[in-house]
Image (cartoon, rainbow, N blue to C red; front, side, top):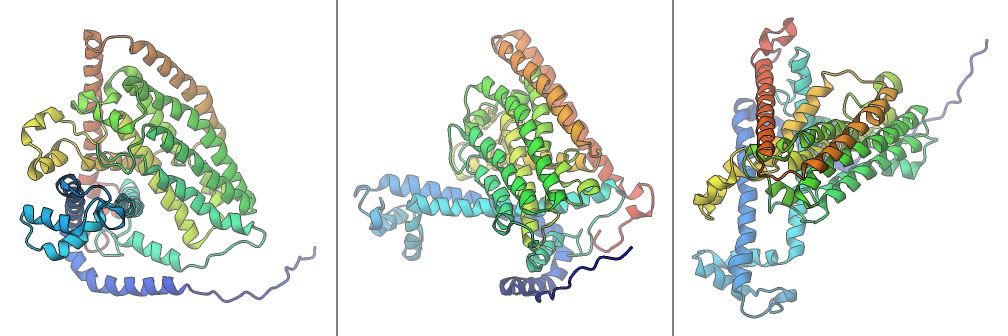
Length: 509
């Protein structure tokens, strides 16, 4: 038997991206300077940063409201009096600031002048959403590594940053930014390069219609639900393109699995979402969220047995939509090397994971709005009627009764459930994935949809309607408390688990 020889071709030297090198050098300097400080004051810095972000966002909202109500609302020269067609002149802004007693009018009036234009606000809000969409994957990746570590009786990442490995995701991002961006010789170059962005951009566009609160939304659309579902459906196109353009059988198998999985589970997921829409009678997500402000017993998941079942069906289908275990067949490492990601490297590889974790937040946020009260706390908002509309009253309402903080907290809790499931349940076969969808979930959701149709004929004031709602509310509360209790028990007993791996191996643990 003769051994076949492969012709040798000299390889071009790797060219480092100058921008990546500059970012890496700057990050290294900042890391060495702030690492000792963060190691000592990490919890204070973390929660202080969270509080500062909340205060900053609230202050920006108050500033926009001030420009609308106190400045534009008091304008007297007409809508075209200002420079470039704006409703305000600089003199009118100065007069409005003097009326409320602002002492430094000279500079403030020029800073407030651009805020009267909608395009300026849209750019500012879009940048805020983009930053949030980048922070969420970084935090979720760190959170998943730590959760996996505790589930497996080990500490998880600990060394980078010295405090529970907090700097591991930024370090990975900088590393991937400097890696060589390889494209296989037989791959379709343009499609191979554009595929990560075809996956990421639809997920980002979904934030346009995803409400964080009654007024905290980029565009309040009457068909917001359809926009988000459409964007989540387009995401699969990028995965298929990545698998096909790689010219690798493992990548093609992963792309085809994603196509079969996504097309199958979109049907029960969409039908499950029709049930809360049927209950409220609108596709507007802000309206659906606002009708659940009467306390946790008014959340749509506890309205009747059919909405409760629809919430469960949607959550399972959302796992398949995000390629999360036990439905992570498109990336099945034990079978397909890395699935559709096999031929990717560097920052393009990272974009796929950023898109996945961002999509996890989108599907979790959609479930929060449609089933779990949206941005409303478990307390009825009617209890806040005596707080007034002042700054203090609005702040208390936003923290205690309803606001973006509650929406983000609920969505992150659902992300944690997705992480928990990944490191608890094994991966199932592709035939089992399709069987569970077509022969189990689809018939069940059709029965739920039909049952909810007849249930809506019962008057909401009927005693049977209220009794079932109370029973489901109690069940939901028990499940939530049990869930938190199990998580707390595992966290408190993490050092008493089996084996020496449960012991913290580095300082700061």
